[in-house]
Length: 102
Image 1 (cartoon, rainbow, N blue to C red):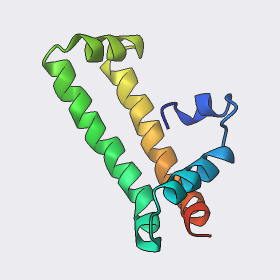
Image 2: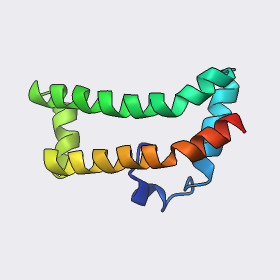
Image 3: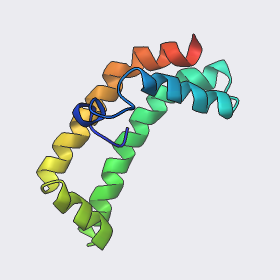
Image 4: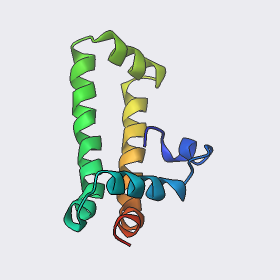
């Protein structure tokens, strides 16, 4: 999710729609059962890798990344949001797996 869970809950795409949307993506790409089962973990891995990428971009002074982190309230606030999103993804894994394979 592009939004942290508490913000996502206030949108029209709250909770129940997200697993369904992920299922539509998997269907659209024609993923087999094994690929579907690996998708939630791949999302978690992407979330972690993207954190390192953003840190590198901020360290290099890349203006769009620096602005994004500043808008989030600084690196510590950005990290807290990222940690919440990571926890949320891990907590949602059973729900996502069910939607993808059910």
